[in-house]
Every structure is written in structure tokens, then in C-alpha cells.
Image (cartoon, rainbow, N blue to C red; front, side, top):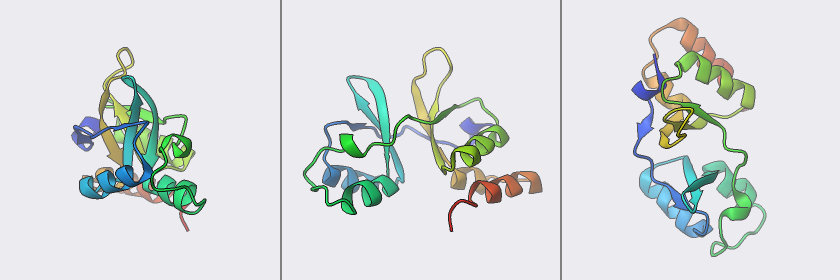
Length: 140
């Protein structure tokens, strides 16, 4: 199975100047756990629901502050034509459950976002299921 078969397409992007509050509202509205962040048409980071809690709320950052200081960097990604087993191995190695999906190695344009849940929803064999479990082990 390939990532383009399971990923969420047409991801909403945020500007690096977005505030913490705007970001939280947008993520709630979109029911998204990860949002790509752009600055001048360049992918500069991502913000996750975890970033909002651990890097903003827990540290007392104002809701009116920019999200720039709380971004997860470097951006971890995969390509839309990658197979799910390779992507799950990458997620497990990096202890993440979501990745930005790029179209190809040349243009590296945003194609979407993929999560462990997206892959699990289409899981068809026990090897993939085991990879999903392994990918989630770092969460206690």
C-alpha cells in the first residue's frame, strides 16, 4: 500500500506569523493533530497538538504570541509514493505518529499529511499491524 492511498490531501497550512490561539482554533476546526507551517512559500516547520501543550501552554507562552518559537523542526516527511511499511519504520525510528507528505524528490511540494491512524484505517495484514504497534510503543 502507498501513502497517497491513505494520506489526508489538501492540508491546510499556517503562516509562521499565526498566533498560538489562531493555530489551536484552526487545528480544532480541521480536527488536525499536525499542521504544516510556511513562511514565504517555504515549509519552515510543523506544529502539532503536542507542541501546543508542551511548548506553549506548559511554558506559559501567551495565546497571542507567534507559533514560530514552538515549531517542530526539522520537518520530518515522506513522499506520496512511499510504501506504508517504509513510512511506519521511519515514524517508529523518529518516535512520531504523523508526517508531512511531499509530492516527489524534485519539487518537494506539499501533497498532504499522513498519520499512523490513516495507515491503520486501511491495514490489511498482520505485518502492517505489528509495525503500527511498534510505532506507538514510545507512548506510555
